[in-house]
Length: 130
Image (cartoon, rainbow, N blue to C red; front, side, top):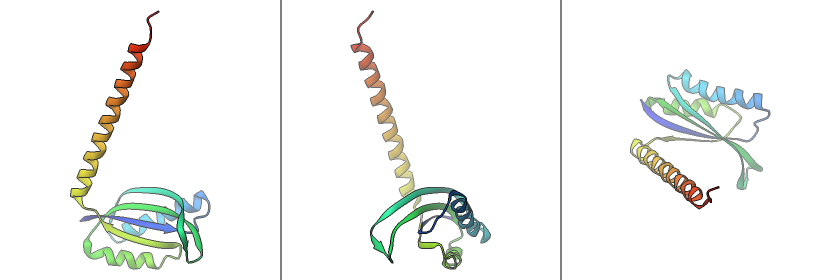
């Protein structure tokens, strides 16, 4: 099985309950054809750079999943039947790039923690003793 990211844009999301049902439905389509959902990221509502088909903004959603490569076109066809999807993009996840990104994130976090510890030490040294 290979990992993929499905990026969706929805233009009519409605209330929170309806949005939760939409997310469940998108995940259910993956499970229905034998895939496994690894994670879901609600990226929120964003305004388009320019109007698209008379639409000004959309709600973005990313789902990471595992699926057999031969079934990706079947998944695209199933999503094409759903009216609420404005745009869909399915991308294969490159494990080498993912490893580099996680390493960079860990290094950035370590630098931020070191800078915070240094700032705390400087503040403690600058504070006069009572």
